[in-house]
Image (cartoon, rainbow, N blue to C red; front, side, top):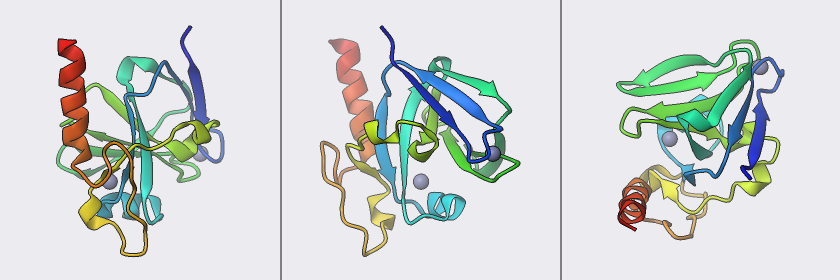
Length: 145
Ligand SMILES: [Zn+2]
Ligand SMILES: [Zn+2]
């Protein structure tokens, strides 16, 4: 009984669908995300690559730093994805692209050190810690269990 999450860019040229449970949902406060999105912070949802299907159009990519690709709609410019070779086999989508963005509740934050001073610290299971490290730890634990 897999859940399906539908998403699209602003103009609707790029459409996609993600099935199953997200791996994680996290804020990102890094400067690169800020520039790519134009927003003070981003929230990403991570799905396994095989859980995601592009159903219309294609996501244009920009290589923002070694190993990091940022996806967008070439027609309307919507910020859509960020992928990092340090987290292989994961598709990271900006939650704003999804129809049911409200269901993706962030549990922590990445790059807390780059958070703008007037953005409140995000609490939660991973709040204020190195969220990537916590994600990795949780994954190790579930592998063993
Ligand atoms: Zn578009
Ligand atoms: Zn970022």
